[in-house]
Length: 233
Image 1 (spheres, rainbow, N blue to C red):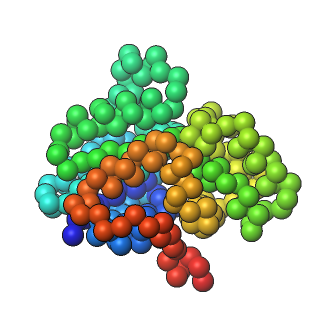
Image 2: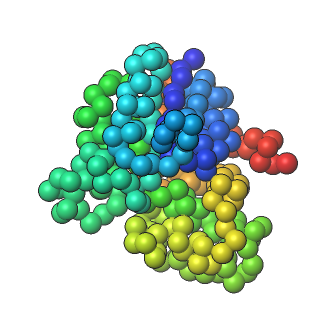
């Protein structure tokens, strides 16, 4: 049995890990536990600064040396004190994936724990939902779905940018004002399925491959995808 703690930015990512990733990996004896970041005593969710996150990562890495620790933080609006963002290299990069890799590499260097696997989502969680916008049809009208499909036709999901007006979540809310991140986000991702998400999002898939490598003995590669009964109900 292998354990991994995933420090996540918000409730949407927490539900995504719990209801899509955890059932899949549990079948391969990798047990994932999502943990919301703490922002202040009694408050969880949201990234305020790297200074507040770093001790949480280090504590998780050290309290269970036999387990692994990873992150699921959005590149979009990532606090600017995160490692790498003030470097000359950062200012020269234009590609979101390259920026995410730079932050991940600098995070790994700064935390310096053998059981730490940093992951930065390009550009934010909602990029995953653009893999198959037709799954918004259960929640939005046909016009909204068509608008989202038009965005998908012009962009790969992880290429949808980090501009305040055109980031993935902004595009979704422009088409579907009733979009609720914590409700619709995990449900739509679950409907799309993990295999489709991996196929369309190379940086996300690279992270999952690193999780795959933690499994000492892979007992099968079946495409089991299921949601928690809480989401299906």
